[in-house]
Image (tube, rainbow, N blue to C red; front, top):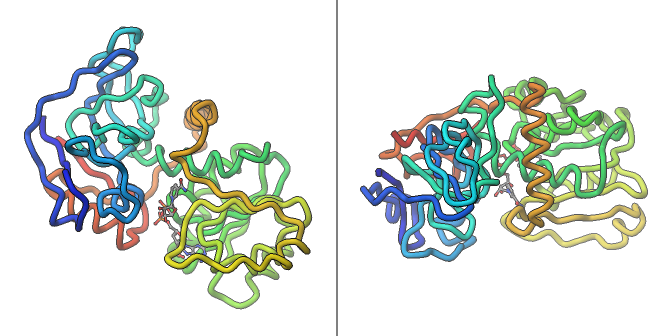
Length: 322
Ligand SMILES: NC(=O)c1ccc[n+]([C@@H]2O[C@H](COP(=O)([O-])OP(=O)(O)OC[C@H]3O[C@@H](n4cnc5c(N)ncnc54)[C@H](OP(=O)(O)O)[C@@H]3O)[C@@H](O)[C@H]2O)c1
């Protein structure tokens, strides 16, 4: 099969190559998926570059996310799953078989049935962003009737945080940096979209109501705003590291009586990941999740795909393996 892979860390153009390798067979408890679309996330270029290195087992096919069709199953997996359309999550975590290839193999539970009507584009967008958004939203309990602030609502995680929060019955306010991103965030269903670069952003959010839970992409940049709009018992949940770590204003955080939570998807408990995958699939079946604007690249353009994500492409970068 054709696969994009690397065997050392480095710049995309230096280490990524396309090679013909043996098609993998599914082991016990695994399925093999013929990949239609592979979704690229910031974690993929960070792992590949060595910025946040993950061990390489001889070679690494990048990307956790994708959509495709199961074409073989290993021992212990229901053969009736052959032919099932699926979306994948964490395909390349502790494994060499990422989705940037014509086929991937992964544990059966990490290839989740795509409901009828859900496109491959949508399936390939979900993995890392939707799973991260889910745990950030629900780690501290339900959000029904609560007010949620999603920082950066046009980002991939932000997009699914808005949609999953709305599906769960929350009121959602989100921040963006300009009109095009405001349009995206509004389309995702946010009740209020605020430009965080303009004066008065905190006032506009406060008028909307006290925020119970913040889903935060830039804690250092936004902590003053977050503390200004939250109340005692609110949670601020951070899932992204900025280039420089912020200095924590401890007294201000104490006075606000907020809870700070930090999330890294790779360390979330398996039971919580399985619950997230089931909830996301239920939301898909309800038509509550939408794809991000897609930027498609061929497998031979894998380096350009990684560079597009690294430079902050708005929407979802997808690689077409075949
Ligand atoms: N911890 C985890 O497990 C985990 C999981 C997924 C992603 N991540 C990390 O989370 C980050 C985002 O991932 P992504 O896939 O959502 O990326 P993305 O699609 O590129 O979105 C990033 C968004 O952040 C927004 N943003 C940046 N600074 C902001 C600020 N000060 N206030 C509000 N919004 C701001 C950007 O909008 P503007 O440019 O308009 O500000 C952009 O829309 C990456 O660093 C990624 O590595 C971590």
